[in-house]
Image (tube, rainbow, N blue to C red; front, top):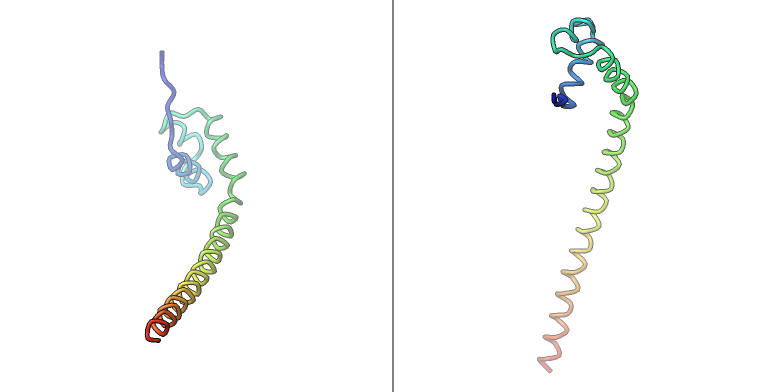
Length: 99
């Protein structure tokens, strides 16, 4: 029994870009890589359908970076507050021991 070929996302994207950019015709890509035309058509439809998500991911990444920066500032502030509290505690313990 013959097993099905598995194609990587990079391979699919490159074949679709070959067709969409006009570098090759769909027939030429199918012939060269021994693909069925309906498979290439499905890849192309998926590519076009999900194209907007490329830019949406960019917005999500930017939001995540802003949140990370905010949390890093908070960690920095809390670290400084903790150091001040430790020094104050040491001073109060030291002043009690000297009495």
